[in-house]
Length: 141
Image (cartoon, rainbow, N blue to C red):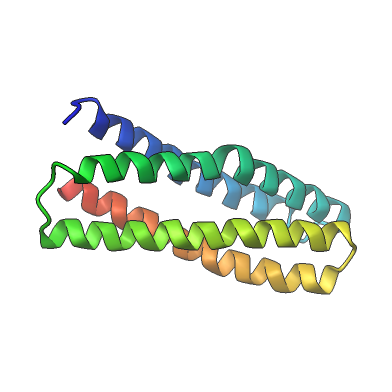
């Protein structure tokens, strides 16, 4: 196993968690502050998802997959993988929702924006739970 890979994986996962937390902060700062701010929020969140979060998610999946080649599959690792898979798939769905929410904001479809926004925040919480679970279990492994 490449001795740098576990450290790189941890850094990438930490950056992904940090990105999710920063997004939550700018969601709290801009949501409900008027339609112009919500349009700004939708555009900003999409840019962060496209240029930062998605590349980090892919890098974490690739590095994690490479790490798996040399690790024995035990119960703790299975639990970590379940949490990681939950985070990955929920995050991919959130990215789709962020894009749809942006389209609704740009079209002035604010009722649909709010509906998608609620679903995006619900699944965003699932992402964070999965990430924190995988990270916590990773510290134990």
